[in-house]
Length: 447
Image 1 (tube, helix red, strand yellow):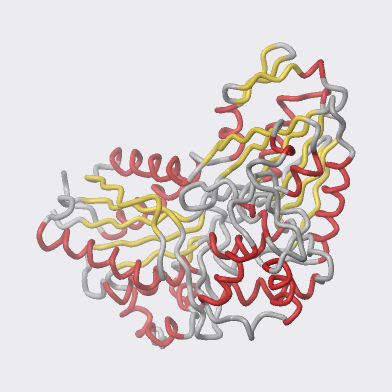
Image 2 (tube, one colour):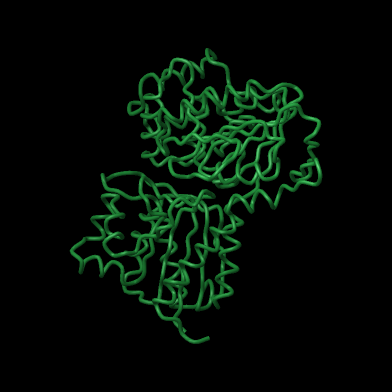
């Protein structure tokens, strides 16, 4: 194979990312698991005779909810009576029957609260001869905020900001969120019961744990108030969280507030759950595209977690190892990983975990001119920015300095966005209307 130029590798990285993204588009994901034959809707192994239900409704939440609802509207057709979903601002599709409420993410807002109340009310209308489809995707936890009795939206907002900044994993964050809510942790399934409930899920959680995705509104809760309080103690955030939040959790530990429904609860008798898309599908599609472009591919993991900077340095080190020894894959090589890392905020800059990953990697691979590293969020919005992530190579750190920017200072200030914006290396996709965590690509070619 002829040697690839750095510019070709940069283009390859972007196309490999977009191919992975296309593999988890909500519409195709729904249609891969659901098909209609006459009046029967096949969802996985389950068959629903649409004619036998008095009312069919769609409820849901998440960044991909609108695209998922569009696919379900096409399948259910005029048998669909009504529907309501909450999505992140701008994550829209043209829907016929299902109404959309745009809301705040990652910090919940009043629109999200109003949407959660209306979704809960719609669920509570369901009778024993009704069928409810619930569409869940990443971001759903923030987009479906319904504070527990005695808590305010301001309490939830403050708690969200603390949890997002402390370095906790999404599993830990959502364990706490479930126990501050009147709709998460299976409580939405309680509202739907005794109607039949089918939840279709686009997973944005490492390991695809159903009760963690969007804080599991229709899934039995495997956690407890004690688990939630243990996480607060682990990160020593007792005094950063609102006093009302800490007191609420303490009351739950003491038994003054009922635990969320567990596996034995009756509300799950008529409930089924199907994962229609996940990070692994994204990673596999990216690997196929990389192979088609002539790279020797290696999937590191679709379950990658950890502090962003440290994970980035590991990826950078592996890229340098390929150039030096040909291990763990021979050049030209493509290493791929998925999952979701965490950032412990120390500075006051602008960026997200993927931009921070790319910047940390850029410092690690400086001078390795045959390496390209891309890190992007499949939802198209990395942290509070309009970028999905960023692309770096062995020249990035030097280019930044030549442009008057200190890359190490930007990293320490959690301020990757303006650096990559000035270099023209932001990964800009716009809202993708999907979300299956992150995709990272390392290209190494010295042949």
